[in-house]
Each structure stands twice: as structure tokens, then as C-alpha cells.
Image 1 (cartoon, rainbow, N blue to C red):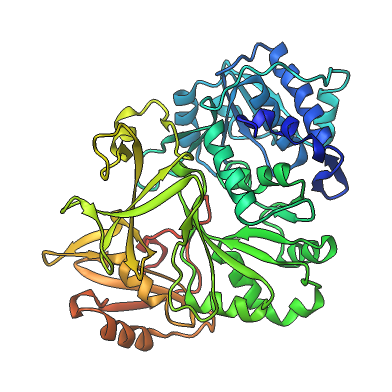
Image 2: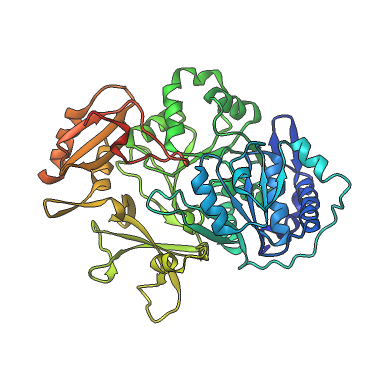
Length: 499
């Protein structure tokens, strides 16, 4: 097994002639990705890029983007992906923090241009631009001086709970995940997956790297295309698996009357995560696509994507986070009593794993808060990740409840708002739901698949399940919810003035 991402293509030369990346009318093999990335690595070396240098990129889901990333890693440099949805102030802060040697951008009016004074800029607007840039440059292998503990990328958090933090992820941590997931789900050269995630979002590499190991194919597609375009791709290219959030699966339900136009019988697995999946949505998808296995993943950016997976059964009342990958262990910790939680007890989710981050860039204080000694073995120097997520043991399975940040005090009583939302998601018609505190009251905002208000049903159900002080006093139906740059629900009352 290779120990760095840069070595991965050489480690699996048996896949050299297999098609790897497909984008509209362009396809390249495993060997061609190796050659093109070698050429781009030499472009970087000619302008003085060395091991450990930081390179910021703002690129979309294109073949040349993968070549650029592999070229950066072959030099031993670190890539920092940035979303064009970030504000100029956010990008300016990140540029000042990261001090990049080079900035690579796709859009000619990229937000990075206005924040890149005295930086080397490379503009690559298309695959054609990229091939012109590397023309006549040697594609011979480079001597690698990268080791598994070296940093591959730094990805910045969205900053919804404070200033964005740069998560440093090593080659070895990423590859631990890749080998685990290929082995766990028996991926092979017959698999065809879709990569819809932009490079600025951490699941991107989880949709690219496993196919290099398995020998399968990847179809690149922008995540803002129509549902019909996505369904056409699945049908025409005989896609076998892809990953997404519940928001996309909701569109499948809305378009269920038109799905018969597409041949989706090749589809065998759909991986979901990122945010809460309601019971009604999952059961509807299982009925709509009865031959597809739905797999729930739980993880964090700090532990590189999904640490656990659960293969969903039909008619499950709750969806646990599942069992950990081979290189990981997950448990719930009772901080007050300094012990592992018991059944039906809430606690913080702790992750032991070889996929953990090296820390937060230039932020040792924040790093020490979350990477701490294993509380089960305090004599050891092993560091584990305190996720700030709350879970609950139910019949030896961990159920994700929400964030510790969403614990509030109401009339002196501590309440976890996500615990209430978790119950609301058990109702069949609930599409999305959040609970917030407003002026010493609990307020529930929700949407439904039927587009009908269901506040009486929600209130009555919560009264059966919860203590009276945990039942919201107000219920507000929403047509749509606001989302952040990573498409996650924004838990804020600013999206409505009806309260």
C-alpha cells in the first residue's frame, strides 16, 4: 500500500489503462492522470514551489482540477481549497493566515484575485487551458520526498461557530480512510461513481481517491445541475453508487412521478450524511428505489469524512451512525462522571482513529481543546478527537443527536435543542426541522413533503415523548430553509419574521 496520495497511482499500475475520470466529452485513464500531474508538478517546480509550500486553489469539478491537485501533492506542497461563495473578508483573512506561495484560480474574476497582491497567480479556465500549460513538459515520474505524516491539504471550516479554522490533514490519514472504505464495501473496477462535490468541500477526495484503488470510474458533474441531468447521467452511464445529502434525496421524492423515464437499475448504493435524514424521507427513498442500499455515514472534517457507516434497514425507527471503519473506534463519554456512557445515556462522541487531523493551522489553543489524551487510557500519550457532537447509546448503537453548541438553558433547566428536532424527524411527513430559543421560548421551524402544516401533529407527538418544558410553544411552517456555503441548514430565526 502506498503511504502518500502522490504514490497512489504508481501503487496501482494494474489499473493504468482503465478509464478513471470522465467529464462530458473528455475522459482520461489512470496512467494519463499520473502523466498530466507529473507535468503540472514540473510547472510548479519551475516557478520555485517546494515541499511544504502552500498553494491556494479555487477550482470547480473538472478533470484538470484533479490533475492540478495531484501535481501539487507530487511536489510535496499543500493545497488549500477555497469556495467562491466565501466573502472577500473571509478570503482575505485566510490568505493572510496561510501565506500561499501560489494561487490557482479558474474564474477570471475570482475573489482570490482581489486578495492576492504580491502572490504568483495561475489562471486555468478550462481543460484546454491546462493541456496548453503542460504542453512539451516531461511526464516522467518525479522522485518523491513526501512521507505519510506530511500535510496534504488544509481546509477551512465554515466559521459558523466562530472564526474559520484551518484543518491540517495528512497523506496517511486520508489513505487510511480510502483503504478502509474500498475494503468495507468491496469496490472494484466495475464500479462507476459520481463526484458532484466541489474541491472546496472535504468529501471531494472521498469521491475521487477510492476509485484509484479499486480501478473504477468517476463521472464529474457540477452539483448545481438539474435533477434530470443527474438522472440522465445515472441512466446512460450505468452509475453504481454516489453520495449526497438529504436535500438532494428530497428532490427525488418530489420528482418520483418522472423517475420511470430513466433506467436506474444499475444503481446499487447511495451514501448519505452531512445532516439529519428524516424517517419519512428514508422510507420514501427505500420504497422508490427498492434495489438500492442506503448507507448512513457519520464523521467530521477533523477525522476526514465518514468514520462510521450504517447500512439502513427498512422500517427502522431510528438511524444509528453505525460501526467504525477498521482504523477507527467511536465511543460516548460522560464528562461529569469521567466514564464511557451507558445505554440510553447522552454523551460526547469521541473518535480514536488513524484518520485524525494533525491539528488546526497556527491555532494550537483550538487544537488542544479537541485533540486530547484518550480519557479511557490517560496513561497513554494517544490523542483522540472530542467532536463536540452529542450521541446516545440505544441497544449498543450510537444515535447522533446534535451539537453540544445547541444546548441551552431555559428557566434554569438544560435542554439540547437537537434532541427535540431528532424526535420531530421521526414523523413521516417531516422534511426538515430545527428548534431554536427565542425570547425565553422554544420555537420549532419545519417543512413537510406534503407542503401542508403539521404543527398539531408535531406538538401532540412531542407531548407524548418529552417533558412539558421541552415542548416548543410555537411552530412555524417553512417553505424552504436557508443554507450555508456547504449546503447545511442555517439554524437561525433570521430566515423568518413571523415569530
